[in-house]
Image 1 (cartoon, one colour):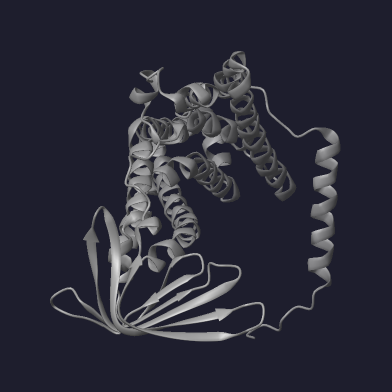
Image 2 (tube, rainbow, N blue to C red):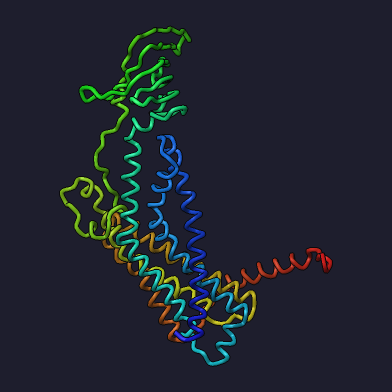
Length: 393
């Protein structure tokens, strides 16, 4: 790359990294909050929560990276246009390819990153998230041994202990069982142990009471006991290997499916569509970079012209991605629709290159252009009517 190309590439790269970091952080927080209740309710530490949710970051980066390319290209080309740098480069005789090369390089680099993520890193991360959450759900004994906290170990079943001894015993037990529609049971005990006997997990409480309340008439009865065993076995899901969804399998696993697997047989269409979607993912960053350059790669001398170009670039990118999603959805039921999964980004790439090679200038349709002009004039009128601050204010 020459000096101009390196300058544009550096600006686009900084914009891409900033956009990717911010958007990934925002989406990660929103997704992490969905798992917060589960992880904290099961008594897991914040470190375990961060580790589990952090495993999904490759998948989030895969989703966001192509759109970060769009934002970076728009910001870079729009700022070059606003600062008249595109005009100067064109007036000096520089080819539009000198502007395109750094933008396209970002798209190709992100496409290579998307290939690594979609083929291996993202599904491996999602698979580990599934395994970690499964382990959290089945680790019942570890979750209820949390002194001083009220833990809901099942819908309507709340557990609390005051303290835990060095020998594994617990003291100050409160167990409230509201699962029965006709009655509620509250167990209070001075101490107890969790023991394994005859393939059962039992909470053996000592020196306590059972308070039984009938919901229909509100009557209350209290029974004292010296020892009482509460069966926890039915609350502990069996620890079995989770069934991985298509999105949680690497490209190599998708290419070598076990045809005897009942889950594969029931979801053959989803696996078929997932495979083709994975193979097409690396094409989108390149397609998006070319589509944005198609609208913003030429100097625009008016603010309305720049606004229309940005609007056109965004519309083209959104339509292309929606078409890709639509083709992928159809491919689940109609295998022949998988052709569209590849056709959408390839048509965007080939069509953009063909228009650029022909030196044609892309513009919005006349009705849409007039609408944008009208909106721009309206905004200008409103701005002019606003009172101006005095100088020095």
